[in-house]
Amino acid sequence: MVKYVAKRILLAIVTIWAVATLTFFLMNMVPGGPFLSEKAISPQATAALEAKYGLDKPLMQRYVTYMIDALHGYFGVSL
Image (cartoon, rainbow, N blue to C red):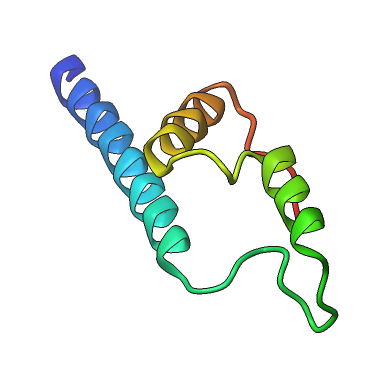
């Protein structure tokens, strides 16, 4: 019974990791960005917002940060 429960828990962890990874990369493939709206802002303001939220970093660095934060229960600021 313990072996069955351990297997199910491991499978759940792998599934959650796969869904989180897939979601992260799909959201980064979508054209546009979180700061695009009907009203245009200056490139300096866009750069400042990207720096504030870490969007100016390479994709893999953002992924590692995302996964570490998710393990600690922090899922970022809601936009």
